[in-house]
Length: 294
Ligand SMILES: Nc1ncnc2c1ncn2[C@@H]1O[C@H](COP(=O)(O)OP(=O)(O)OP(=O)(O)O)[C@@H](O)[C@H]1O
Ligand SMILES: [Mg+2]
Picture (cartoon, protein in one colour):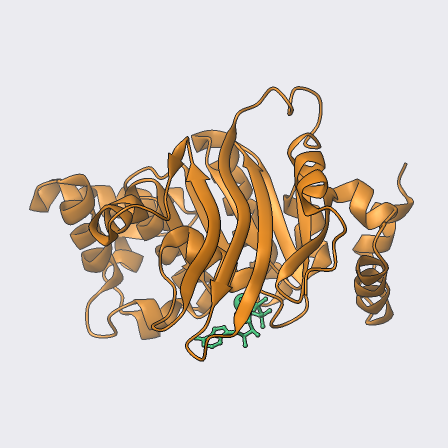
């Protein structure tokens, strides 16, 4: 059941919320009335609306099972077997995606859309050095020759904030920490210059310091490369650090959306209030600071 009385209004407010000029800024990704059903026929997304202005960072929060990941996967065209879009529209830069053939969707991933998830190690081959894996992506997705790809891989690892990138490029995944692996995955995901990067719990497994560093990298990519971000996190402090706007998910729908500071400071939906209270009860102060700043 969607709890929001008017999700379209909430989504529009979110689109208009990213500060002065945001309303004029074009929407890069728009999701309208997205419905998704799983293999047994039951519906798990009941009409999700999401607006992602170009160049913005949009946060998705909400309890476990509320539909954040399936929304992201529907956008990416990567729903699990048996899980299907049954209604609504997903528009990227004016192109409606749900009607596109699977091969077109696959081409969009990596070129226009990219994603990083929790557990970066599981996306890497354990028996190939990370530089060689990154070089392979550069050969396939960017069309670089063998030598240029190797060179570019080291450059990219350096640009992701990895020290001694030449050395790191020769290391195997098991030799790198979680934060380093996530930087390698981020490098891979952005090789072809996507416009939108979805980070679904990408920093959840990292310790607080490393998490902050990886978030800073995402913010840098946004600033320097104009990357638009969708950030899924349970951590409201992460969302408040990175995101202009936030969408609050509950039971397969968006119950509240708006500018992050406004939503955290003056939540309108009781569920959002509950989420913030729980967050603060478990000792994370930054949300309260965020809320008390005027
Ligand atoms: N492959 C699947 N088959 C059946 N149901 C699924 C499948 N994947 C997800 N679901 C169901 O869809 C709903 C939304 O799941 P989703 O993974 O999008 O939640 P989430 O908000 O990302 O949760 P979390 O915060 O735990 O990652 C849940 O009820 C979940 O059980
Ligand atoms: Mg999830």
